Image (cartoon, rainbow, N blue to C red; front, side, top):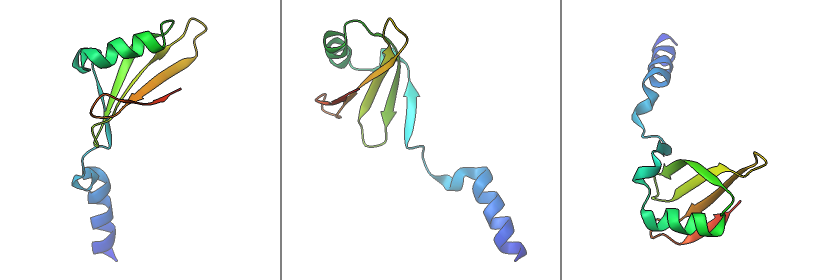
Length: 84
């Protein structure tokens, strides 16, 4: 029982050695083509964050003038997957 508990605690503390499923990245690291398309599709949105996922997809997010969070998801190749 103690070994199991110790293993569980170590796994929680160390994250079990897995990579995070997604990572915040600066907008400067988002390909310019993606930012250009995002600004064309959602011109009223001020983009301020980007998330890169393990599968290579990128989500660019920001807020519209009313404060509503909007985002656009791109595939690794730059195709639009979803606009929210």
